[in-house]
Length: 192
Picture 1: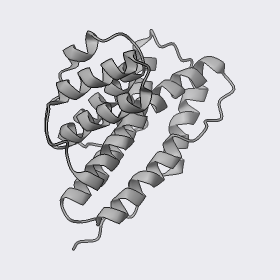
Picture 2 (picture 1 turned 90 degrees about the vertical axis):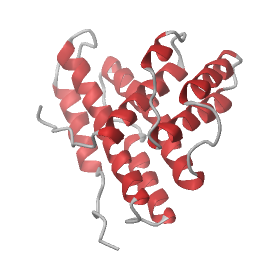
Picture 3 (picture 1 turned 135 degrees about the vertical axis):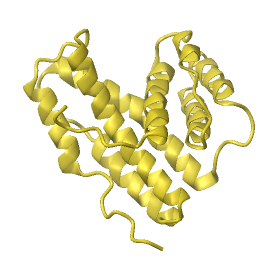
Picture 4 (picture 1 turned 120 degrees about the horizontal axis):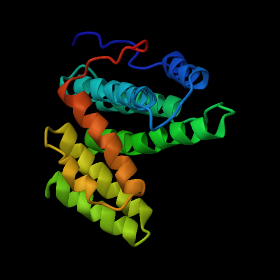
């Protein structure tokens, strides 16, 4: 076994992104602001993709993989220290999108990809569960869709566009980042 990289993601890396968001004028309608938030999300998804890939390639044991994922999750989903209410809401949106990415990765490592159904089947089931206010089931279905994305299946974003805006659309947004990261796990440069 080759030695896996010692650190997939760090608190310092996350904090650098947060500091950039604090320092910049953020307007979600503005392309560069939107890109900054997307890069923050993609950067985390790439770290998750690298951890899962290291697991798939036998560089990490199951338990180590789950620990690595938990470590990144703890960094990224912890409370953010931003005084600007609007920026806080935007970062919270990114964190919400990433919740499903972590669940999907953990589910994939613990039990492999979902055995039946397609990504779109699970996305539809998640949307139905959300409509019935069963958010735990909705997250479970969205995470199952994520396990299939990790396994190489495609998420058709046009499906997501038909959904009513809510948690499921946020989670699918995160899965879209995960899909990009799985196909091209290049690091997002923090200074772009």
